[in-house]
Length: 432
Ligand code: 4AD
Ligand code: MG
Image (cartoon, rainbow, N blue to C red; front, side, top):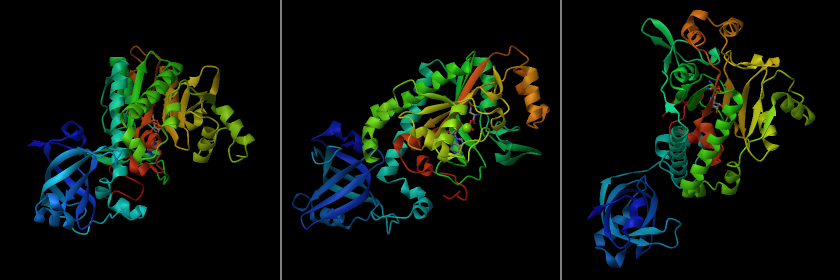
């Protein structure tokens, strides 16, 4: 007999098969038991008809607790009432692992309770849908950059210098030397771009940010492309093309997951239309001031209410360009006509999801960059290797970082970033 998974059932209609599954839920009457089954690949229903199975099979079906693991045999048949379209008419059931008093019942639970049981919560259909979309975005990322001629390069996780804000570093011990967990692979990716032209990284990054918002994780995954001989304008084109590509891939391959999440597909479709609008930081400040945000003056960084307001002016993601030099990292190249702003952009997602990409053209001049290190109080000797890139055939180059979980949260349309990663690390949470 064929051992199959639930998603494969469409290829086995009319056949008797064996499936390993968990009982997600169950209801029964005197004559029939309906088992809601899941096996990781999908969800479908098992029907146990009293008159068609041995009495002990029917009694066993009626007694199964939520999350009991079983092996069952039965015949796959079409089920026009369910969206999935198939079910199994059960012949036999064998219990593999018992389950008593499973804590997550079909009733509503509070968020903290669910977060404490994240290791079990992952089994639910909503979490299943989110993780499938996350997986699709990961696959689409590899496909996109491969198609565009990039190669993946892996920067180190343990580092000796800061890439972004040095107040947000996780400190650790590297034998008798102090070290940090990577906040961004960017500086290493710049070295890689000088070696391989177009590169991208995809790895975990760590920020000891004391932000308790629905957009911040302490540990998150970032995709960081870096491109030699590309100016910032060319980088923006890669960014929007990449974002449109991952959204299109989710639309093409995650239809059921989007339905489970009740995500509006027309809305997502709109985000695949290029180009995305662009406004300058100056214009953004003006727009905010004209609309009653008098807490922002030129030079301030935007908070989430500001980003959300700007986003609502557009029906697509919007690039905000050329932020003040003082609020951006040391490596960004100043604007050629203005010394107070840098050649950078943040891509702000619609619907209040905030910044999904931060990117810039990099300062490539040795003297100017040396001065920037000084201005930021960064020790030159820590960055000696990075400065070498400006000594030996320095070229214009640009890059960006997309936060995977920000993208997943936005594309799924979920409220909070904590559900976009299997085991979120949040301020005050490292369990489970
Ligand atoms: O804007 P950020 O800090 O940029 C960099 O790290 C650059 N070195 C990237 C580069 O140019 N190679 O972070 C990039 C993105 C943000 O736009 C956001 O999507 C995400 O990373 N991000 C976070 N996601 C979740 N939780 C956090 N605490 C995040 N901080 C940044
Ligand atoms: Mg940023």
